[in-house]
Length: 406
Image (cartoon, helix red, strand yellow):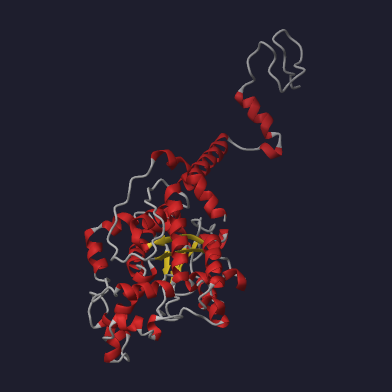
């Protein structure tokens, strides 16, 4: 007959599965026998150790996966070796990359306002920062039909983001056609200086090669090509009178037919669009400050632009785009131009005032003087960027957020 387990003091053990108080724990063999009596807990110490080792390897692998931002290389190689299945097959597409804000920028550049210099900079910056620079081979079609507007807006909107689209084109209202309105930027210059630059560029090109003008205007007659600028203005030739002189405002007014008619309606609409849709409209005569503000506003696109612009090698390329054979009209002709372009000058001075307000917000000094009774003419030269004012720098981030909310 099998004996019952006894207490140290004698008698049967009433708690056969628990060690008595003050006594030694039951032997390992007895525990194994008891565990083996439970069918769902039947395992050996070797099995237990294997499970713990597997769990440890899984935890370490998961930690390594998260720290490295993806599956280890050797796992990808092993997956490729074992079959054609990919990570995307099992887990779906990865989350989309975080886009900079704004991720859609349009530079509807005004002709003869430094745009070729800026485009050269953008080509370098797009390679450096990895944004999508979208350009156009169409240079002489700024006014579009409704269907052309819809087609262009569709092409721009489907470009890979972040993108910066640039073309000579009047302002496009994306929201009118159901698209997301991008952020606009632009640069303008003294209207008469712009007109003179365009007048001589069409005839004689720039320093990249005087033969360029023959390609751009092959049908221009010789007497027209060498027409004296004073005669063109004083004799009221079409090229030197309205509506041809009404050039800058339509880039900001838009595609409405009235935007091409010199008058208050187009002027006020252009001002409204500047306030509501343009992050920055700079002044070519202060180009270095324009680039500095673009770098502050849009660092994902323009970071480092000022150092590139000041680089001697880039200056050599920039100098090749200067118009040749440019002369200044007589004072009488200048006065007539000024009268014919009074709406252009009102818009120019408005934009210049807004630009100087931006500069003051960011601590750049501006020597603001009342608008002259007659325009001042000069060939813009590189300006030294003035040092920021220390006590205004702290407001930059807050004020920039307000700009983006507009």
